Length: 467
Image (tube, rainbow, N blue to C red):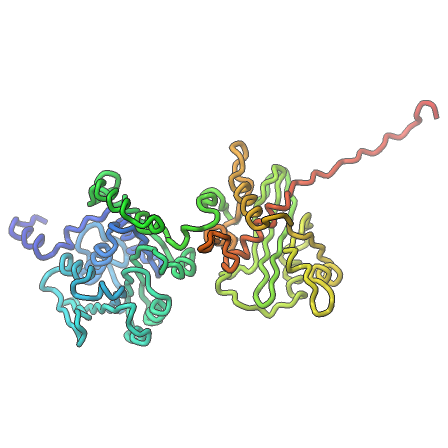
């Protein structure tokens, strides 16, 4: 359709959302959100990645329908949830002079919405001529204030506190979607830990270079300006502020040694034709579930973790009523008669005497026929086991990694990515991610090798000279 010059000028002046051009990372988020495949979409971006502008334009293309060709997908073509939106943000951005109001003023079509303070010292509510209502709320407001209207969409500008997030999720009573647009500083820790990897959550990372005119795709920032910004950042915050990577993971123990695309394999991976030998490892505990894992070792000495317990998210497994007999039954059930070459157990817990004068290791052996070997012992035990794990992940150039994890072992994978060092740079022994990491370091430190059975050939019959 041909549009006259005057109309183009009017649109450019009053309907900027028609002319929004996303950078590469923003485009990925638009596609992910617009597909409607997931309930929660997270845009984790560095400073200058365009988070607030992206959020504002996604809203414009929902409230007034598709405004330009970049916004495609079922959600933009037919919104089926309540037309009420909540924007949650930090107190500085709630104010009229904040980034959100500035972005709305720039991108939303002029004359097609009204703003109301609703008794607050700042604009609290926007109402569109299409019947949408958008409310702004501060993270500093009481949680009970978040437990109100039925919503169809919740947008968080920066990481929300957990209680505000949960209160908003409960407002999606008739279905809806959640969009989180954030720089993942320390406050994002709970969010990354609990949401990342969940089946109904998708995450798009945005590096500041994604918005570079030279190195990005349709970027808007000069590279010299980006370099100047990064140079002035706190070194401890560069991962989050420049690269959109969670800051609370900057001290993860394995760092870049563990890579999902290298070390995680499909659940249906079969043992190699040359055969394997099986093992399992246990990190028992009192008052919470035992952490258990099963693995095979092939003829090259490669360890492949195949199954784990619990199968539920470890962070949600706070207590258990299982007895030793229950665990023995569970172990037998998972193994299904498969012979175990190795059974390894945390030596510290397994050899501590109980009120009856016996040990867990004794009880498992004498009462249930499960014979375990102690986990490794050496000086500087934890650091030594960490290094051994790194060595296995590194492998060698000829054979590749000597340690792989099947994709169904979600708790083990998370522990590889998230067990971190504390403020003293020592391994954080209180971290919930230590338990499943321990399973891996116990196995790697046991020096497991495929034990090739010695074939004893029968002695030939017949007479021997001299007898």
